[in-house]
Length: 234
Image (cartoon, rainbow, N blue to C red):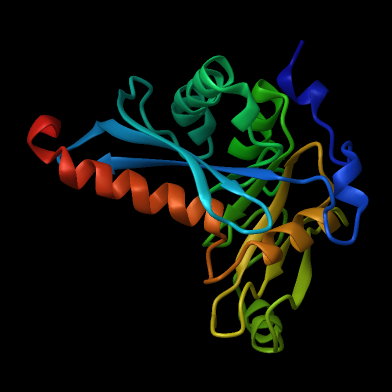
């Protein structure tokens, strides 16, 4: 069975429908940071934050070897296996800290094949998953053109957003002004087991800066790990 046949793009958890996400206590963020000298060696990072406090309650950073070459549009095949392993490790080590939703720096259904890294990760971990990208992936007629830039300028306050609708008529994601001080949006798309509306609300609630805390902390800690262990990386 193809993975995408298991894709769910609507809410599946009780906390997702609550205005304040009552019942949501733990959010996970994942990241891979590569060393500059070798793109086959990276730090895989999984952090779990308490919600709504957004305090890190679990952190796992470790070096991994990436054997799959990079091919544009197929990032999931390169990165998802080690991220799934990190989640599985937590499940075996301390299941009470398992996240109830995952954030990943990448895309979900906002993808050339409608099935990005957030979809793969969500299905393989059986967790709700949200793709949060810093740059717009131009697919299905969605372009970073003058009209798009004008829509961005019209976003006035943190929490303002507009949907990303493709030429097919499908809504593939949303551009969110994540905080009032940010002039650039983040691009949110459904990965698995969550609706776009809920994903946008949840991401905004996790933003102290432009990038939501789960992926921001995962990125910071993976880079710090590489710096501290630089002598072992090369």
